[in-house]
Length: 230
Ligand SMILES: Cc1cc2nc3c(=O)[nH]c(=O)nc-3n(C[C@H](O)[C@H](O)[C@H](O)COP(=O)(O)O)c2cc1C
Image (cartoon, rainbow, N blue to C red):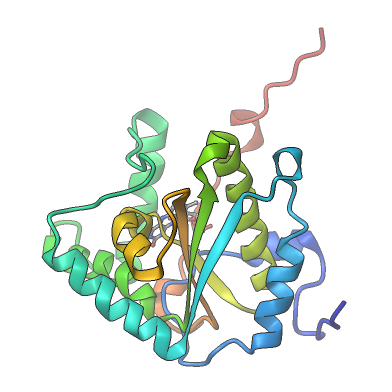
């Protein structure tokens, strides 16, 4: 296993505390051996019956810029999203509150007013250019293996983002991109047997950009864990 420099976090606790969604990146590609190391170790993620149902379509540098230009144009000119899986959750109650709080923190970090719909849309559209990241990862899962495979793939992408963090590399998961699954199938030649589950923008974070400076909050464990002793 590769050595980890002193400036990089070494414990899982530190990694979890440091990881956050990055939405502005430096124009600096991630070396191939680092990408390889991340993918190799992400393969250690558990999956249902060890089926390992995930696939990754990776772009680099100019390839990412070409994808970004094509996707961005497609989103502006298409009739709307064509996802492989229903990614349209019904946010209600506390979940709606959390969604609003995270959106408000994002827009406040950029000085965008709540009522400034055009600026919010422009920021949202940056998803489709991968926020300027040098790498895009389109993650798919085997359709025949159903929801269990989607769960497995979720674990895989979470592990991958922590491994990236260990190398000082930022990332953000992008449900917004997965909504355009049909375009991605054509662009990459993704077979119909795979469902687009996630997209990840990945690269060295611009850690001075205001959009990367806010942090989201988490519920306390008493809201999550219900302990039974009978
Ligand atoms: C399934 C999923 C989809 C997401 N989609 C987007 C997205 O389309 N655009 C975006 O900027 N962030 C997206 N995020 C990032 C979440 O907003 C972020 O993880 C959450 O607010 C917690 O913040 P943190 O990652 O900084 O801890 C997504 C995260 C997940 C897990």
